[in-house]
Length: 521
Image 1 (cartoon, one colour):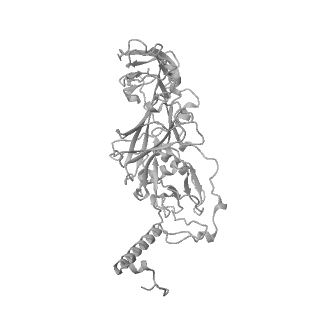
Image 2 (cartoon, rainbow, N blue to C red):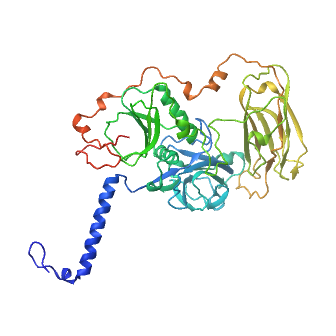
Image 3 (cartoon, rainbow, N blue to C red):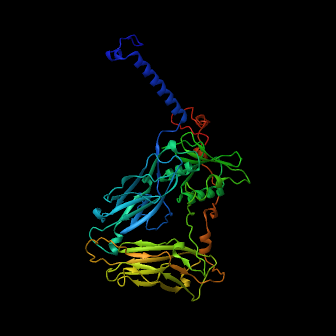
């Protein structure tokens, strides 16, 4: 057999049969066709990590927001028994596998042989493992079949034991941190559809990576539109993305974006979700004067589960108390609750009408149904607090072992405020002894029944002039931006660079060296 250049082939070439050569040529042609198709598609073969996000957004100073400025996205669970609920939104294509990753590390005070993390997906136990990582965040993969397209609720609970001490002080020294940007489910980009679920999944992955969401536009943007977008995405994702306004012609640097927003100047009043030539899922907006963009239909303000039976309340929504009526704790978010440990804290948040105000000596009252374990250490007690002020101290070191008779607790109604309020139940159990590790707590330490009630007296509609009421009603749409937001014209590329612009969603032209082609969306 002769080569094209006329030289004799080596022995290995002679060993090929005619059929092998034909098969090789066919495979080469198929591979070449696949490479051409991949170049036309312009979407790299990769996967995204869709991260966990708290069911309730964290505020600065929240104990769950770990004070670690060098590692953003850290969520801390503190105490002998602690837990939190997280949300995970999966597109219609679902996850690449049933693997859910949790990246964690624990305090050095945690006794690893007796401390563990357990995880439930949509109420089904996905697995548990001992806490053995103390320096760096360690990813742990759990296999589960309970993940489903749409909304998933992830419950993470930890049980901590101190290595040396026992008591309330020791409870504050044991914690586990979750690195949320590295915790979640990995999804192939090919499974992410060009729809609302796909866009939300892409935005969630983009926010978790620490990158901002680019808004591509030419000229000034309507501040009202920006506030509306921020409000919509914050309410749906329970997180506030960082936005960056860039010109349509700004060269792309770094990793390709997963999601972005493009604002056109066509004046059609339309909105849609499209596929960018670089693989990004794009929210395409074309505002028109006097026409409201159909964002409610495109991105529903309240996300529902795949079966439509479950919804997420908007961020910050609180249950309401009707004055003059007995309101069960269960209606205020505190159902039948059990806990173990030497420091226990249960908060109950609710709202009173904005025009409810009492300044005189009327009384509100709880009808409390609670129980506690028998033979708790001497000095054990529970504090009942209203907006941070203690209204009753209940001993827990006598007559335990069962649910106590209903206890009426009266308190000054003027401790309550119009709008948001908080009632706290704080139990403190001394260590016995305090200088040795705690013995295992087999029995439930404290129980509060959801059938307990809160009653507040009615009051004539009345308000007090202060800043509380206007601030409570303030939303993103109410924040005014001074001055027009202009794009940096110096970042506009030259006319030569514009020739690299790809007019088709499938990139069929190549950019010049050093430039990145941008699709129209």
